[in-house]
Length: 199
Figure (cartoon, rainbow, N blue to C red):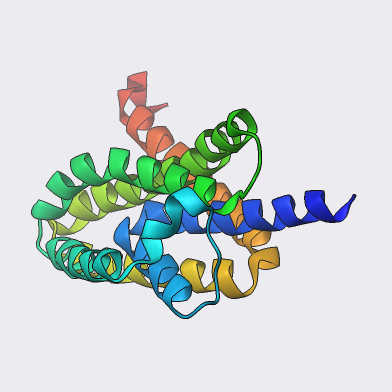
């Protein structure tokens, strides 16, 4: 693998990790990227340099506070899911594209949509399933714990993506496994009562 391919792979790992973090909280990874750019730690493609601007940093900080606050209120968190699901996919796609440098536009956006948008979408679907179960079991009041765990997950995954992107593949595979396991178990539990004679 030549140095250019290694650089692309490294950028893709960071993008996938940040995209997955968007599935937990949309604006935490955007804020993390903006801070990293301001600190000179991260270099984005020229067309995405605005992500590291001071106005973008302030906007992402405010949006993060609002998003985190909204997810702590029972039932409003479900309304937020309808907004943040497409937003997470879009943010994941943009973040991945912003890191892929001088790659051809077709390859850049293909990777960004499939890897970035896909990672964000998978994690977001998993968080929705967990929150739905929490609402059924606790009447929505256990969702505060879920919200705190999601915030922690987004922050940790953002930091890992920026500092140790090699660990992202392992973290993402574990996350995907738990999402699939949780959703499969939930559907299995829903089907059981419908069986005749309780079989």
